[in-house]
Amino acid sequence: MDLQDPQLMRSIIMDHYQYPRNRRECHDHNCKSVHMNSESCIDDIMVFVKVDQGVIKDFCFTGQACTISTASTSILSELVKNKTLAEAKVIVDEYRKMVNLELFDSESLQEAVAFSNIGKQANRIKCALIGWDALSQIIAESEE
Amino acid sequence: MFDLDRIRENFPILKTKMSGQPLIYFDNAATTLKPLNVIREVERILSTQSVNIHRGDYQLSYDISNQYEEVRKSVAKFINAQSDEIVFTSGATESLNYVAYGLEHLIEEGDVILTTHTDHASNLLPWFEVAKRKNATIEYFELTPEGRIDLTNLNQQIHNKVKVITLVHVSNVLGYVNPVEEIIELAHQKDICVVLDGAQSVAHLSIDVKKIDVDFLAWSGHKMCSPTGVGVLYGKKTWLDKLRSIKLGGGANAVFDENGNYELKSSPSRFEAGTPAIESTIALKAAIEFLSGVGMDQIHAHETMLKDYFLSKIQHFNHIKVYNLSTDTGIVIFNIDGIFAQDAAAYLSSKGIAVRAGNHCAKLIHHVIGVTETLRASFYLYNTIREVDVLVEVLKEITLEKCVDLYI
Image 1 (cartoon, rainbow over the protein chains, first blue to last red):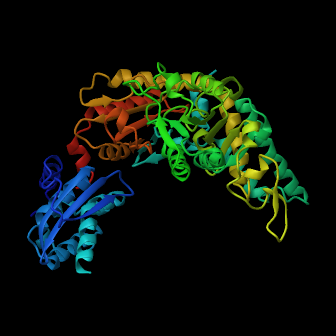
Image 2: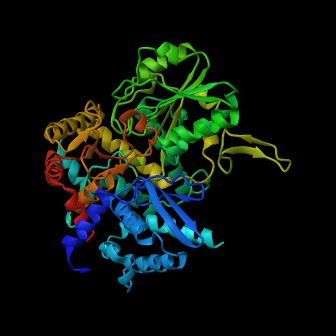
Image 3: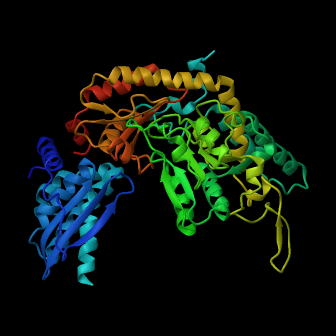
């Protein structure tokens, strides 16, 4: 994916904001959920993750959030479905490096590279991480 | 005369830029900018008189103590109260907490605390806690569809179980001036205490506490051009004397002994334990002088003129929805179709315009307007038609694409 193509990056973000994937509730009682508020923004989302034998079987979310939060969580939901927790962790780690403007491996991030410049707007980094932080929390709990 | 150019010259921050654009500050309901006389007052005290009050066995401390007490007189005059009815706090939030916890001992099981869905967290949460501790109940005034207090059944709403009415004077979201005089008159016939959150009223309207006959009035200095860290709690003397002190310490006590016996000073001193924000408090007097010099009625007229102008310019924009078209003050809340409030605020920021996005700490407001997140533009004495024109132009051409482009 060409990170230098602003039109492509913009269309990825807008598409995931206007048509968020996996924005729904999970009623499965095996689902773990985390409520996330961002300090810098007014986002308020609920993330649901179903882990079965170390594999993420479902990732969905509900709530009100800005473009960056909604689109980044939507992209995440597609990226980690059917991944093992270890694989998901690698993806999340690379994404964190990217939003913090460190060197990262774009291979595993796919559409999430649309946020490669978000780190230049420091006040929105937390928005770009809101769903990802929720997943990290759930992964940590699952490993306990 | 309302001399806008002269007013603006007094606010050095208006000559600065944000995102490379001239700063247009429309977040006055959050806090206000500071005029030169306030800035100089803080500098004067910190440079030449930075000593403590009430400890003065030396000249400097005696002088600063006097200046501190002069502010009490100035604040009292500003709202037509007596000096001993003015308590200095850290802000409206602390003032409102003082009232709720200070009156807790008078609240009994089954009592009702009456408030509104438009109130701010700072007024609701302390009372939620007191109600929980005392098994009291929170009730809300009935509202008209546009979100104003419905006066038709006022007598039933203010029923015999109501012990305290605590409400916002001017809503920080809807900008409506609540009909407090009618409410207070009826409440007093039933011996009910009335507390007003004046965070958005005292800085914008002329207030006469004797005329409206309110029992407590709370507000912040920083929303009326003073520095942060100082607020006021006005309480009628009879009510202040019933209020328990929730913050004890130096300055508030007259005597104490090793057995734990202590006696507090009389109000207002018994509420002011600890060293206060001395320079902020003294600068509050400068802020009052500045605003009084312009005139509170003129300030209100200027704000509502800007609000009317703004509404007239955006009312034909199909992509903008305003939630408080009949607002009485300079507060307008709105949304842009398809653009989340925070994204729109970030885009406006890139054009040098400061507005607030969110629920504005009035988290029950969605019961009234049907949405949780909005944009809020709030005007003050130094804002201009030209600035409103810039906002209107940006709102005219804003798109989701442009908002997203800030991040790619």
